[in-house]
Image 1: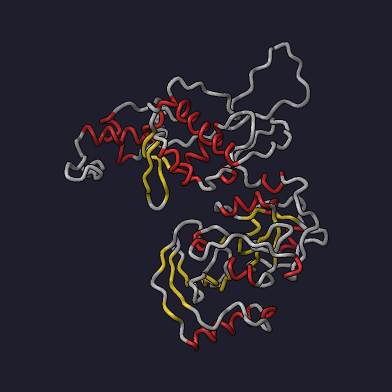
Image 2 (image 1 turned 120 degrees about the vertical axis):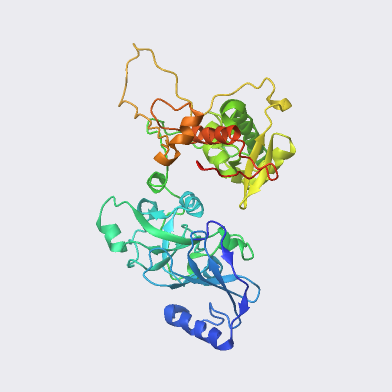
Length: 424
């Protein structure tokens, strides 16, 4: 719900009667905290209406220090409006919600906007707690009761345990650590909360014995023929900085060269990293991970690359975008590409004997577009239609840009605007 920026109206102080009502509501909803002083709902509060990026409306309740403590909204998976604690409140009162467990790599996916899948759950030795569909839960990692996400169960936990190999969504995530709700507060880092601080029981293992099932449902692509490799040695922040810079140069020299990249610009920072840089890291060495660098955040790395003259940035709707790439940079002159991890292995001679099962083929999915009947005249005027009648996104954009140039539709007074004609 808060993975992208949301809009809020001005805060206003709640009346004493409204504060008392909220205090009583939390005691009724969360009776395990009724005797705690101070309770999870302070006496002096501020509130503000909000609208999420998808149009969901609700109310945020703040402390006197402007910390978001609760929000009330119709969260996904719930049948009615709920009063939901934020991670700031759950860190102070870890026993507020029942806890489900998952591994840290899965939490990173949740922070990125994914929901918690059934294969991502860590089941304690005594089994999952008896929880019902539509119930609010906190999501933690084994070893600490510090909540990293809050969401609503989509299925009874008994059903999850009854069906062996169950799949699908287990929790629809409404709020996470490091989302925009968290950023609206003090931006406190994840605390260490010992297991004795709450009533929830943690799974026995503190580290995943095998996290493959947990991540399997969240991975978009996996090469089943790739052999299991030994864990890469730890790298320093300086080494990761150098690896990031080398990968960016590789992408600029081989994938996003001047001919292929121009139709894609401006390119979102996250798309550059996830689609191009991760797929073009060196075949040997450490895995590319922005969080292990000194930059910690992708925006900081790209700003450093901009200072070196490799690229230009601009901000679009709160996200940095690459507006230009400097292929004439001195460090790209005579650049020698390296072997990337995604490169296909060399073919074996025909006489080489095969051992074991044949490797699984990788499926490649390409999104194609077909112009509707109303736009056919525009595409016919420009020409160059593929034999299949379908366009890639880059080809369709190229047709549109060519048409705008042919018809001189760019507004001379405002070059960023286009005058619409009867085709557009």
